[in-house]
Amino acid sequence: VLAVWHQLTKTEMPELSKGSVMMRDRRRVEETIRAMRRAGAGRLQVISDFDMTLSRFAHNGRRVPTTHNILDNRLLIDEECTIKMKELLNTYYPIEIDASRSAKEKLPHMVEWWTKVHELLIEQRIRKDMLARAVKESRTMLRDGYKAFFDGLYESRVPLLIFSAGVGDVLEEVIRQNHVFHANVHVISNYMDFDHTGVLRAFKGQLIHTFNKREGAVTQAAALSQLQGRPNVLLLGDSLGDLTMADGVSDPRHVLTVGFLNDQVEERKESYVNAFDVVLVRDETMDVPNAILRNVI
Ligand code: C5P
Ligand code: MG
Image (cartoon, rainbow, N blue to C red; front, side, top):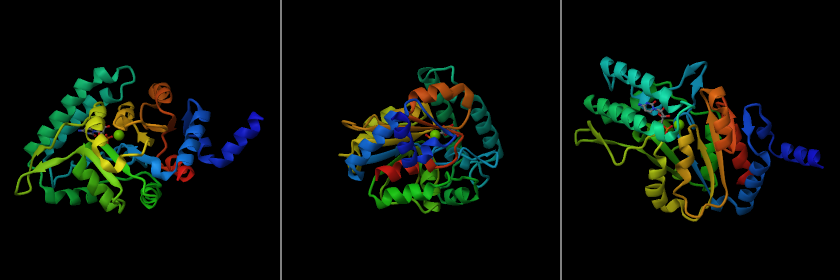
């Protein structure tokens, strides 16, 4: 009987049998998807991280830039700043993804990283009217299947909250240039504050880094009226810190978490499988999230 049941569910969602998929409890995943389908699109919201979740981690063996790294363009910053930003990345990124340290241990280092980089960017007097060109000239790329993902949610009137510790202005430009910045998309991120001549002078609001998304969730996300009355959540992220992005949802019912495991795979596999319902190992596509959504809405 079990074998038959498995076959049935397999044909229902063949994507879950992809080699890149790992699940602690497949049965629970399928039950959650069924419960979400019964409740319908009107009860669903999608909360997603941006860098290395909606955008690709790598393409043809080369890293794809994050929103911060898109700013590494001579139109915006000088060579010295590029070098300093690289040094900071080399210092702090290994800490961000270190499997042997807790989020609590990482937190002060992340604050330091983001604060230093934002100070450097402000010194560079970045011009707002150059951002679109920098995005165009960058190698930024969304994951394969991104169009079906964004368009499908828009057509089904399911809100998509993009919750990013990257740079909001750059993020918006990336999705605009990919023609998927639809009306159902809401963004919480670090936004630049420009003076009246269009020169960067500060970052707005509370700093968001990889390990304080909970605070943004309970203050900013919880206040978004478009997300009210939608207790079912599909959450997508690539960092364990992303799991707190749904902490602002009031009375959550069915929450399904999907984690992209891009880097330090062997070291982090166990913790990701324990923390996310579905783990996608070195999977540069939206195939699995899209299959889940096709099933639910
Ligand atoms: O959108 P998301 O929350 O993923 O954006 C944060 C990511 O940006 C982090 O995972 C971090 O590795 C990366 N980052 C970066 N350069 C910085 C700060 C963060 O590439 N200066
Ligand atoms: Mg990310």
